[in-house]
Length: 397
Image (tube, rainbow, N blue to C red; front, side, top):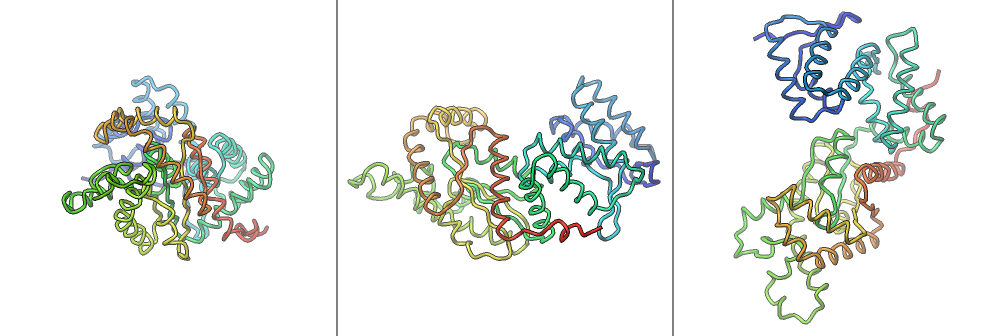
C-alpha cells in the first residue's frame, strides 16, 4: 500500500507520513507515550486512503483529535513546536537541508549541562531571532554561533563554554559510556532513563538484567550467591554464617563476590558498545569502581562514571516503598525494608569506594535536579579532551 505523502507548501517538499514521527512530536508536547501512539495510529487510519495531505491539514487533524481528549496544554505545546519545525530550514556542512527543531535545539543545550528551563529560554530566543530574519534557510554554523552568543549574554562565559565543549565532542563521533552506580532503590534506573532521553542514547542496560540472565544459565546449586539480592549475597557463601567478621564486613564481602561474577557480562556489554562505536548507559548496583577502572585507559570513547546517593534514610526508605509498588515483580517491599540496614551499609561502602577512586557522587534528591547534575558531570569529563574555540567549531565571518 502506498504511503500518504505530507506536503509542505513553504518549501515544496513531500515526505511520507510516519506514525513514529508524529508520536514523538506529541510526546515532546507532553502527551503520554501510549496515548500519543494510539492517537497517531488513529490519524494514520483516517488518512490511509489519501495520497497527499498538506502540513496545515495534518496539523488541523491532530489538534482536532487533541481537543477531543481535552488536552489544552498539549495543544499549546504542539502548536509552538510544529511551526518552528516547518518555517526555518537548516543547511549543514554537506549542504543538506533539515527543518529547524526547537526540541532538538533545546535537547542539545540540556546535554551541555544547562537546566531544562534555561535551555527552553535560550531556544526560544534563538528561534525568535531566526523567525524574524528575512531568510528561511540558515547555515548550522550560524545557529551555533547565535546560540553561543545567547548563552554568553544570558548565562555567562562558562555556560557558553560548556556548549562549545558538547558541540566539539559531538563532532568527534566518539561514543559516550555512562556508568551509573548506587545502592538498591537510589533511583539509578529512573535517572538513566531521563539521561538517555536527553542525550538520545538508545542503548541502555541494567546490571540487574544481566544478573538475571546469568541466573537462567547458572544453577542455584552451583552459584547460590548469584541467586539472591546484592545486600544478602554473603548469606549464600559457605562459611559466612560462622564467620566472626562484623556484619558490615560480611555484607561487603558477599557483595564484592557477586559483583565479580556479574562484572563478566558487564564488561562484555561495554566491549560490544566500544567495538560498535555506539553510546551506552550501564546502570546498577554492580557498577563498581573496580569495573570502571578496567576501562580507565580507553581512548576511543568517553567513559563517565557516576555514583548516585540518597543521603537521608527516610528518603531512601520512601523510595524503596515506591519501588515495591511500581515494580512488584522485583524484590518484595517487605524484603527491602527488613534489610534496610544492609542496604544502607552497602551505600556507605559504595560511596567510600567512589570517593577513594575520585568518582563523582551525586545526591538524588530531585529527579530533574539530579539529571541536570549528571549532565554537568558529563561535561566536566568532556572538558578534559574537548576545548575548541568558537571560531574553530563554527568558523569565522
